[in-house]
Length: 57
Length: 244
Image (cartoon, rainbow over all chains, first blue to last red; front, side, top):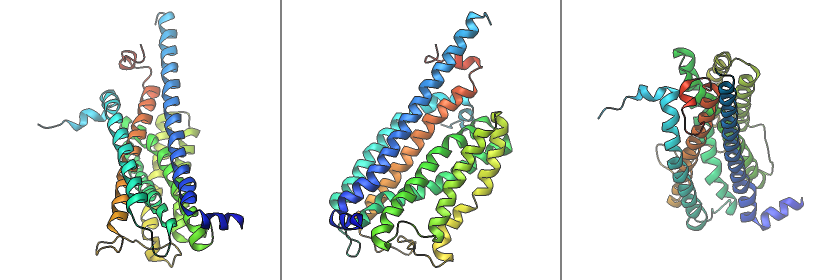
């Protein structure tokens, strides 16, 4: 009930934080995850290459 | 000058091309998003009946459209991978799925935020809302099915079937407001015209392009990791500057 009153008194804050804030946060998390995934994948590939080279393959 | 498109259907050449394109798509997306927000909040007038709440439209409609369009793109790539056995197509389908799922989630989330002040409810089992929820589950099903099979080529084929069968849901979402009596409103923009203010249209379409460019940039970033992972035993990966 209190949220109903608050959203009607602060419609722009409700719109900004609730929809745009959450959407941009999700986009930021997605970008961070994709960049982290690339970093991890590159590390794995480098380690694999080093292991292959040390074994003389 | 003719461009040999087939050249870029190989992961070897596409990896470098994607790397060059990502900054252009990302920067364009940020600029267009800022323009859309400026028009949407500073130029577009307040709605006569919905007040300020209608401004959710500038994120809700573009993310909803992109969530449906990305599913068709994903199913298209999956079908290409299944029919022609092209590696890159299947990799692209896998790369599109998480972004599509996030767009479907944002569409449902912003829809709920809009529904509460307008309808008095966060959620109703309306045909449009339910079919969009099914779209989110289809994306999650695709991701889960792909992750559950160890062999990537078998995972590609199994998930491709789900993606192709699930694509029937997209026209259902689009036409749901025409086929059934729904609480969700019908299309505001039609071929015959629209009653929307020009600034509202500009903000919505600019955000649509921004979301589309963002989706391309993130998908390209993700597919580069998938290519690296799957092609790690090849010689061309070993010769990459970032791997050395």
